[in-house]
Amino acid sequence: MYERSWLQLGDVMGWIAPSDSKKAVKKAGERIRHGEDADGDLNILNRWRAAHGYIINTFQANLRQRTRGTNIQVGQRLKRANTIIDKLRQGRALDLSSMHDIAGMRLVFSDIPSLNEFRASFHLSRAKHEMINAVPKYDYIAAPKESGYRGIHDVYKYKAGTLAGAQWNGLLIELQYRTIVQHAWATAVELSDVLTANRVKFSQGEKDHTRFFQICSELLARKYENSVSCLPDMSHRELVDEWSFLEGRSHIFRTLGEAGQQGADHDLKGFILLVVPENGSDLRVERHRSYRSAWHELLKIEREQPTWDVVLVGGSEGESLKSTFRNYFRNATEFIQLVESAL
Image (cartoon, rainbow, N blue to C red):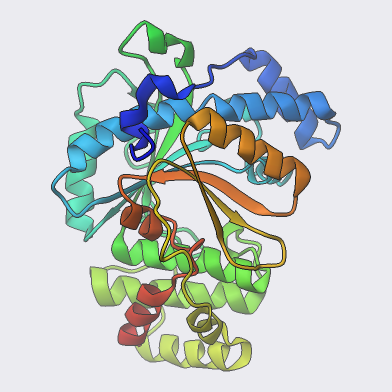
Protein backbone atom coordinates (compact mmCIF):
# COMPACT_ATOMS: atom_id res chain seq x y z
CA MET A 1 0.00 0.00 0.00
CA TYR A 2 2.81 2.44 0.90
CA GLU A 3 4.34 2.14 -2.55
CA ARG A 4 1.22 2.97 -4.53
CA SER A 5 0.53 6.14 -6.52
CA TRP A 6 -2.26 8.65 -5.92
CA LEU A 7 -4.33 6.83 -8.52
CA GLN A 8 -3.94 3.36 -7.01
CA LEU A 9 -4.53 4.50 -3.44
CA GLY A 10 -8.06 5.49 -4.44
CA ASP A 11 -10.92 6.16 -2.07
CA VAL A 12 -9.34 4.43 0.95
CA MET A 13 -6.95 7.34 1.32
CA GLY A 14 -9.31 9.63 3.19
CA TRP A 15 -10.29 12.25 0.64
CA ILE A 16 -11.73 15.41 2.12
CA ALA A 17 -15.06 16.62 0.72
CA PRO A 18 -16.13 20.30 0.57
CA SER A 19 -17.78 21.32 3.83
CA ASP A 20 -18.39 25.04 3.23
CA SER A 21 -20.78 26.60 0.75
CA LYS A 22 -19.34 28.47 -2.23
CA LYS A 23 -20.97 31.61 -0.79
CA ALA A 24 -19.06 31.18 2.47
CA VAL A 25 -15.83 30.51 0.57
CA LYS A 26 -16.34 33.61 -1.56
CA LYS A 27 -16.98 35.83 1.47
CA ALA A 28 -13.92 34.45 3.28
CA GLY A 29 -11.86 35.16 0.16
CA GLU A 30 -13.14 38.73 0.03
CA ARG A 31 -12.11 39.34 3.64
CA ILE A 32 -8.69 37.80 2.99
CA ARG A 33 -8.27 39.92 -0.13
CA HIS A 34 -8.95 43.11 1.84
CA GLY A 35 -6.83 42.09 4.82
CA GLU A 36 -9.89 41.87 7.06
CA ASP A 37 -9.73 38.12 7.66
CA ALA A 38 -9.80 36.24 10.94
CA ASP A 39 -8.72 32.70 11.84
CA GLY A 40 -12.06 31.34 10.70
CA ASP A 41 -11.46 32.62 7.17
CA LEU A 42 -8.11 30.86 6.91
CA ASN A 43 -9.82 27.68 8.13
CA ILE A 44 -12.39 28.01 5.35
CA LEU A 45 -9.61 28.56 2.81
CA ASN A 46 -7.79 25.45 4.02
CA ARG A 47 -10.91 23.28 4.00
CA TRP A 48 -11.65 24.47 0.46
CA ARG A 49 -8.07 23.79 -0.61
CA ALA A 50 -8.08 20.33 0.96
CA ALA A 51 -11.21 19.32 -0.95
CA HIS A 52 -9.35 19.64 -4.25
CA GLY A 53 -7.16 16.62 -3.55
CA TYR A 54 -9.87 14.25 -4.74
CA ILE A 55 -10.26 15.86 -8.15
CA ILE A 56 -6.49 15.93 -8.61
CA ASN A 57 -6.53 12.17 -8.06
CA THR A 58 -9.38 11.70 -10.54
CA PHE A 59 -7.67 13.66 -13.30
CA GLN A 60 -4.36 11.96 -12.61
CA ALA A 61 -6.01 8.58 -13.13
CA ASN A 62 -7.26 9.65 -16.55
CA LEU A 63 -4.00 11.28 -17.59
CA ARG A 64 -1.82 8.41 -16.41
CA GLN A 65 -3.88 6.02 -18.48
CA ARG A 66 -3.62 8.24 -21.55
CA THR A 67 0.13 8.77 -21.20
CA ARG A 68 1.09 5.18 -20.38
CA GLY A 69 3.86 3.99 -22.69
CA THR A 70 4.81 7.54 -23.76
CA ASN A 71 7.57 9.91 -22.65
CA ILE A 72 5.03 12.49 -21.43
CA GLN A 73 5.79 13.59 -17.85
CA VAL A 74 2.82 14.04 -15.52
CA GLY A 75 2.82 15.75 -12.14
CA GLN A 76 0.26 17.29 -9.79
CA ARG A 77 0.25 19.74 -6.93
CA LEU A 78 -2.05 21.47 -4.46
CA LYS A 79 -1.56 25.23 -4.37
CA ARG A 80 0.17 26.65 -1.30
CA ALA A 81 -1.93 28.72 1.11
CA ASN A 82 0.50 31.65 1.01
CA THR A 83 0.35 31.67 -2.78
CA ILE A 84 -3.46 31.73 -2.73
CA ILE A 85 -3.50 34.58 -0.22
CA ASP A 86 -0.88 36.49 -2.19
CA LYS A 87 -2.87 36.01 -5.39
CA LEU A 88 -6.00 37.41 -3.76
CA ARG A 89 -4.25 40.40 -2.18
CA GLN A 90 -2.29 41.24 -5.32
CA GLY A 91 -5.51 41.28 -7.37
CA ARG A 92 -4.41 38.37 -9.57
CA ALA A 93 -7.57 36.59 -8.40
CA LEU A 94 -10.75 38.19 -7.12
CA ASP A 95 -12.81 35.22 -5.95
CA LEU A 96 -11.52 32.32 -3.87
CA SER A 97 -14.52 30.15 -4.75
CA SER A 98 -13.75 30.37 -8.48
CA MET A 99 -9.93 30.36 -8.35
CA HIS A 100 -9.17 27.79 -11.01
CA ASP A 101 -5.63 26.68 -10.17
CA ILE A 102 -5.90 25.53 -6.55
CA ALA A 103 -5.69 22.03 -8.03
CA GLY A 104 -3.08 21.70 -10.77
CA MET A 105 -1.87 19.05 -13.19
CA ARG A 106 1.29 19.52 -15.24
CA LEU A 107 2.13 17.67 -18.47
CA VAL A 108 5.51 18.03 -20.19
CA PHE A 109 5.96 17.01 -23.85
CA SER A 110 8.93 16.53 -26.13
CA ASP A 111 7.74 19.13 -28.65
CA ILE A 112 4.85 21.40 -29.64
CA PRO A 113 3.24 19.01 -32.19
CA SER A 114 2.96 16.22 -29.61
CA LEU A 115 1.58 18.72 -27.07
CA ASN A 116 -1.07 19.93 -29.51
CA GLU A 117 -2.00 16.40 -30.55
CA PHE A 118 -2.47 15.21 -26.97
CA ARG A 119 -4.42 18.30 -25.95
CA ALA A 120 -6.76 17.98 -28.95
CA SER A 121 -7.41 14.33 -28.14
CA PHE A 122 -8.11 15.17 -24.49
CA HIS A 123 -10.65 17.77 -25.60
CA LEU A 124 -12.54 14.91 -27.28
CA SER A 125 -12.55 12.79 -24.13
CA ARG A 126 -15.86 11.23 -23.20
CA ALA A 127 -15.39 12.21 -19.56
CA LYS A 128 -18.17 14.46 -18.24
CA HIS A 129 -15.86 17.16 -16.93
CA GLU A 130 -16.49 20.54 -18.57
CA MET A 131 -13.68 22.66 -20.00
CA ILE A 132 -14.77 26.18 -19.09
CA ASN A 133 -12.30 28.22 -21.16
CA ALA A 134 -12.33 28.77 -24.91
CA VAL A 135 -9.62 26.71 -26.64
CA PRO A 136 -7.32 29.69 -27.42
CA LYS A 137 -7.89 31.64 -24.18
CA TYR A 138 -4.83 30.47 -22.24
CA ASP A 139 -2.61 29.62 -25.21
CA TYR A 140 0.64 31.28 -24.18
CA ILE A 141 2.55 29.61 -26.99
CA ALA A 142 0.59 31.44 -29.66
CA ALA A 143 0.59 34.59 -27.50
CA PRO A 144 3.47 34.42 -24.97
CA LYS A 145 3.17 36.38 -21.73
CA GLU A 146 5.19 39.57 -21.38
CA SER A 147 7.42 37.76 -18.88
CA GLY A 148 8.40 35.20 -21.52
CA TYR A 149 6.22 32.43 -20.12
CA ARG A 150 5.10 29.96 -22.78
CA GLY A 151 2.72 27.04 -22.39
CA ILE A 152 -1.00 26.30 -22.61
CA HIS A 153 -3.52 26.05 -19.78
CA ASP A 154 -7.01 24.54 -19.75
CA VAL A 155 -9.47 24.79 -16.86
CA TYR A 156 -11.98 22.02 -16.13
CA LYS A 157 -15.03 21.89 -13.89
CA TYR A 158 -15.27 18.53 -12.16
CA LYS A 159 -18.37 16.44 -12.80
CA ALA A 160 -18.46 13.04 -11.14
CA GLY A 161 -19.07 9.84 -13.03
CA THR A 162 -20.22 8.15 -9.82
CA LEU A 163 -22.65 9.02 -7.06
CA ALA A 164 -19.87 8.87 -4.48
CA GLY A 165 -17.89 11.56 -6.30
CA ALA A 166 -20.80 14.00 -6.62
CA GLN A 167 -19.72 15.82 -3.45
CA TRP A 168 -16.88 17.35 -5.46
CA ASN A 169 -18.97 18.48 -8.44
CA GLY A 170 -18.16 22.00 -9.58
CA LEU A 171 -14.61 22.21 -8.24
CA LEU A 172 -12.05 23.49 -10.74
CA ILE A 173 -8.68 22.17 -11.84
CA GLU A 174 -6.05 23.65 -14.16
CA LEU A 175 -4.09 21.56 -16.64
CA GLN A 176 -0.73 23.01 -17.73
CA TYR A 177 0.75 21.83 -21.02
CA ARG A 178 4.44 22.62 -21.67
CA THR A 179 7.22 21.35 -23.87
CA ILE A 180 10.53 20.29 -22.33
CA VAL A 181 12.03 23.61 -23.44
CA GLN A 182 9.20 25.70 -22.02
CA HIS A 183 9.28 23.73 -18.78
CA ALA A 184 13.04 24.17 -18.40
CA TRP A 185 12.57 27.94 -18.69
CA ALA A 186 9.60 28.11 -16.28
CA THR A 187 11.24 26.05 -13.54
CA ALA A 188 14.50 28.00 -13.91
CA VAL A 189 12.50 31.18 -13.27
CA GLU A 190 11.00 29.67 -10.12
CA LEU A 191 14.38 28.47 -8.89
CA SER A 192 15.99 31.83 -9.60
CA ASP A 193 13.21 33.60 -7.70
CA VAL A 194 13.98 31.43 -4.66
CA LEU A 195 17.75 31.88 -4.89
CA THR A 196 17.64 35.64 -5.48
CA ALA A 197 14.45 36.63 -3.59
CA ASN A 198 12.80 37.83 -6.80
CA ARG A 199 9.26 37.55 -8.21
CA VAL A 200 9.85 37.21 -11.95
CA LYS A 201 7.22 34.45 -12.05
CA PHE A 202 4.59 36.97 -10.95
CA SER A 203 5.89 39.77 -13.22
CA GLN A 204 7.18 41.64 -10.18
CA GLY A 205 10.87 40.80 -10.41
CA GLU A 206 13.88 43.10 -10.32
CA LYS A 207 14.37 44.70 -13.73
CA ASP A 208 17.58 42.86 -14.70
CA HIS A 209 16.16 39.48 -13.72
CA THR A 210 12.92 40.05 -15.60
CA ARG A 211 14.75 41.14 -18.73
CA PHE A 212 17.24 38.26 -18.48
CA PHE A 213 14.49 35.64 -18.57
CA GLN A 214 12.63 37.44 -21.35
CA ILE A 215 15.78 37.17 -23.47
CA CYS A 216 16.26 33.51 -22.55
CA SER A 217 12.67 32.75 -23.54
CA GLU A 218 13.16 34.39 -26.93
CA LEU A 219 16.42 32.55 -27.56
CA LEU A 220 14.90 29.18 -26.66
CA ALA A 221 11.75 29.68 -28.73
CA ARG A 222 13.79 30.48 -31.84
CA LYS A 223 16.46 27.84 -31.39
CA TYR A 224 14.32 24.83 -30.51
CA GLU A 225 10.72 25.48 -31.52
CA ASN A 226 10.88 27.56 -34.71
CA SER A 227 8.86 30.21 -32.93
CA VAL A 228 9.12 33.53 -31.14
CA SER A 229 8.39 34.68 -27.62
CA CYS A 230 8.04 38.13 -26.04
CA LEU A 231 10.87 39.91 -27.94
CA PRO A 232 10.17 39.05 -31.58
CA ASP A 233 11.66 42.26 -33.02
CA MET A 234 15.16 41.82 -31.61
CA SER A 235 17.91 40.28 -33.72
CA HIS A 236 19.86 37.30 -32.48
CA ARG A 237 22.97 39.46 -32.07
CA GLU A 238 21.04 42.01 -30.00
CA LEU A 239 19.67 39.23 -27.78
CA VAL A 240 23.11 37.69 -27.22
CA ASP A 241 24.76 41.03 -26.51
CA GLU A 242 22.15 42.10 -23.97
CA TRP A 243 22.15 38.63 -22.37
CA SER A 244 25.93 38.87 -21.91
CA PHE A 245 25.64 42.36 -20.44
CA LEU A 246 22.95 41.33 -17.95
CA GLU A 247 24.76 38.16 -16.92
CA GLY A 248 27.96 40.13 -16.40
CA ARG A 249 26.11 42.48 -14.08
CA SER A 250 23.73 40.13 -12.23
CA HIS A 251 25.32 36.63 -12.54
CA ILE A 252 21.92 34.95 -12.77
CA PHE A 253 23.14 32.12 -14.98
CA ARG A 254 26.11 31.44 -12.75
CA THR A 255 23.89 31.38 -9.65
CA LEU A 256 21.63 28.78 -11.26
CA GLY A 257 24.62 26.67 -12.25
CA GLU A 258 26.02 26.72 -8.73
CA ALA A 259 22.74 25.73 -7.09
CA GLY A 260 23.41 22.01 -7.45
CA GLN A 261 20.79 19.28 -7.30
CA GLN A 262 19.00 17.94 -4.23
CA GLY A 263 16.81 14.98 -3.41
CA ALA A 264 18.48 12.54 -5.78
CA ASP A 265 18.30 9.66 -3.31
CA HIS A 266 14.69 10.06 -2.22
CA ASP A 267 11.96 7.56 -3.06
CA LEU A 268 9.18 9.75 -4.44
CA LYS A 269 6.14 7.50 -4.67
CA GLY A 270 2.83 8.29 -3.02
CA PHE A 271 1.84 11.52 -1.29
CA ILE A 272 4.91 13.77 -1.11
CA LEU A 273 5.58 16.95 0.84
CA LEU A 274 8.46 19.04 -0.49
CA VAL A 275 9.70 21.32 2.29
CA VAL A 276 12.22 24.15 1.89
CA PRO A 277 13.02 25.92 5.19
CA GLU A 278 13.24 29.70 5.28
CA ASN A 279 17.01 29.69 5.47
CA GLY A 280 17.25 27.94 2.12
CA SER A 281 18.82 24.82 3.60
CA ASP A 282 18.52 21.43 1.98
CA LEU A 283 15.20 20.24 0.64
CA ARG A 284 13.27 17.98 2.99
CA VAL A 285 11.13 15.26 1.41
CA GLU A 286 8.34 13.56 3.35
CA ARG A 287 6.35 10.55 2.15
CA HIS A 288 2.89 9.80 3.54
CA ARG A 289 0.62 6.79 3.36
CA SER A 290 -2.55 8.79 2.76
CA TYR A 291 -3.75 12.11 1.42
CA ARG A 292 -5.27 12.96 4.80
CA SER A 293 -1.99 12.26 6.62
CA ALA A 294 -0.03 14.44 4.17
CA TRP A 295 -2.66 17.16 4.41
CA HIS A 296 -2.54 17.37 8.21
CA GLU A 297 1.26 17.50 8.20
CA LEU A 298 1.13 20.24 5.55
CA LEU A 299 -1.17 22.32 7.77
CA LYS A 300 1.06 21.72 10.78
CA ILE A 301 4.16 22.99 8.96
CA GLU A 302 2.30 25.99 7.51
CA ARG A 303 1.01 26.90 10.97
CA GLU A 304 4.31 26.45 12.82
CA GLN A 305 6.66 27.68 10.06
CA PRO A 306 4.66 30.21 8.00
CA THR A 307 7.70 31.42 6.04
CA TRP A 308 8.74 27.96 4.89
CA ASP A 309 7.96 26.78 1.36
CA VAL A 310 6.00 23.51 1.57
CA VAL A 311 3.92 21.94 -1.19
CA LEU A 312 1.96 18.70 -1.56
CA VAL A 313 2.81 17.08 -4.88
CA GLY A 314 2.76 13.79 -6.73
CA GLY A 315 3.84 12.27 -10.01
CA SER A 316 3.36 9.15 -12.07
CA GLU A 317 6.77 8.04 -10.85
CA GLY A 318 9.69 9.42 -8.88
CA GLU A 319 11.75 10.63 -11.81
CA SER A 320 8.73 12.35 -13.33
CA LEU A 321 8.13 14.24 -10.09
CA LYS A 322 11.78 15.31 -9.92
CA SER A 323 11.44 16.69 -13.44
CA THR A 324 8.00 18.32 -13.23
CA PHE A 325 8.94 20.05 -9.94
CA ARG A 326 12.65 20.41 -10.61
CA ASN A 327 12.78 23.90 -9.08
CA TYR A 328 12.37 22.28 -5.64
CA PHE A 329 15.26 19.94 -6.42
CA ARG A 330 17.42 22.90 -7.49
CA ASN A 331 17.91 21.41 -10.93
CA ALA A 332 18.53 23.96 -13.69
CA THR A 333 20.92 21.72 -15.63
CA GLU A 334 18.73 21.33 -18.70
CA PHE A 335 17.94 25.05 -18.84
CA ILE A 336 21.64 25.91 -18.70
CA GLN A 337 22.49 23.47 -21.49
CA LEU A 338 19.64 24.68 -23.70
CA VAL A 339 20.51 28.36 -23.27
CA GLU A 340 24.24 27.79 -23.83
CA SER A 341 23.46 26.08 -27.13
CA ALA A 342 20.97 28.80 -28.11
CA LEU A 343 23.61 31.48 -27.45
